[in-house]
Image (cartoon, rainbow, N blue to C red; front, side, top):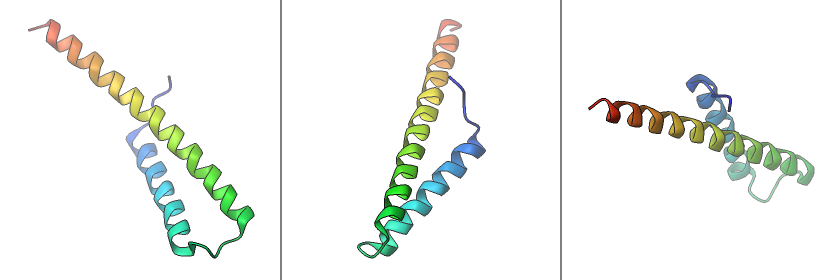
Length: 71
């Protein structure tokens, strides 16, 4: 699994924040096609963030196991 740098991660979080802000700002007054595109983009970002966080979680577990063995 490819890991994401923290910089990439923060960019994705910012992109997601911008998409959320779009929907909050426009609530019921936005182009449906544009809204669907932005929603799809948001879902893709969420999936990528979940995968990145799983990767970080796995790395942390590996480190904990490694250093626990050394004790």
